[in-house]
Image 1 (tube, helix red, strand yellow):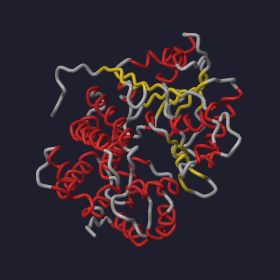
Image 2 (tube, rainbow, N blue to C red):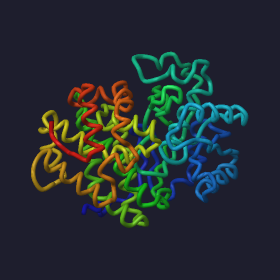
Image 3 (tube, rainbow, N blue to C red):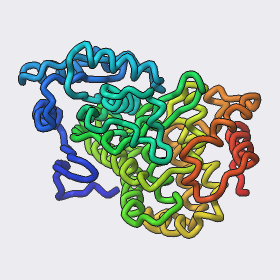
Length: 395
């Protein structure tokens, strides 16, 4: 295993935004806020973290540093539009001037969406990531955001999108604006130590899905490809260790970096894994990383002919036994089994009777366009059925 011996796991990076990485960097949260002009932050976090020592400590440290901070945690694991609206009400009621997104992807998505909406008159769905809809927003009224991830998977801390479920249409939508990119990120591996093994596995596979789909996505973007390759190497080396021993701070640190790399790389695009995963999350409230993990081998098999050359390079880079798609497939299946990922959608409560509704949502999902192979209605239907029946077959 590559342990990066001789290199301190500490750094200040400015790509794709200002990132402070290293154990204990959470102590710099007040300084990160101050540098963005935030004097009264609203700290948006997951309900499960709201009463945790780490959140209480962060709030107290901000207040002691002259930045009175208040918490908001009324959000679901797959956040909906109402969660964002409630956060905006809390922001205005507290006369806040900036947002801290503290937690997993759901907290950071709500934080970024709320930061967008505090100064807008249009409904949130008017800023979906379509064409040039982001130009509808008053960019000058978007609040600054500091992102503090406590999981290693979503990478939302370096994204310009917030994933929010439209309750009326029962589908996930990507809310986009260039200024949704947080102005400061604190990557403190110690904040991920309390994450249980099952969520470490699911979020780690989310990071793998981001790196893998970015690498395979349509288009020419060698910089994203390079980041994605290294992200997958880190996951190969460190995800099993992080799941097996949650106190392994080195594994936690490398997985946190891999997560940030995946979200940086997927500015190139995503694909069928996410197009299939988003509807399951919206309709069944399933964990996003877990659904990505379940779909991964089925999509690899479907995309085989379009990605074979890339998989040859990936297999060589990861030093996998075998060659091409088969080698990557064997690795993914073995990794899923090792860290306890279910093999089919049945384990997530999805039945064939729900396939038609899932397909209808996957057809309009924006991630579909980045898939390296075109996806027809029949293709989407077959992929859902394969994932329900547990049949990994090339087509």
